[in-house]
Image 1: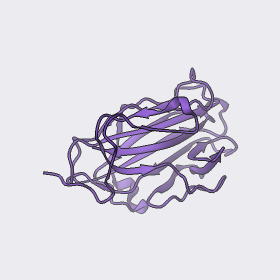
Image 2 (image 1 turned 135 degrees about the vertical axis):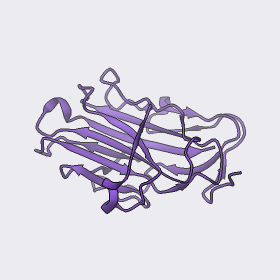
Image 3 (image 1 turned 30 degrees about the horizontal axis):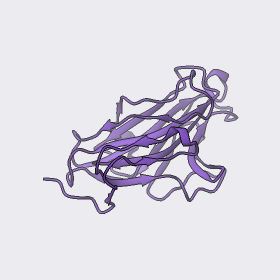
Length: 204
């Protein structure tokens, strides 16, 4: 039987929402959920390479990484290939580790937005791994699984926050990392969109 993780917080019974920088993009929790992890990027320094505690910011192809951004007092993670002058940019924002043996029924939600997205090849994916050891030097020895999730489409307005939907992580055991992976290009103008990520919650 899994037990409560040390980051646990009891969410008030009833329906509770978390808010992005736009009031119309709130997400409602089901009743009486326990939160394991929250990331709102509240400590961001606008425009610097993201180095939030516990996160790994990794450029797999090219040199561009996620940055810390702040707009109207709201912090979020951002990635764009624009201006990189590199044919391929693949960036990963990898979460802290979570012990999935301590509780049951884990779910993940987040919000994402885009600007200048025109191609389905300019992707944002949610990835998970149970054999990554937390050391970027060993990244290529780990396996990652892409999970179905709702992400912004070209039809969404620029900077419109899109709810991911509830992602079921309950089938995973042991140590789990989740990650946001973006593919783009700094030399192909159809692949140099901006992605923004915020309001990440892991709960059960």
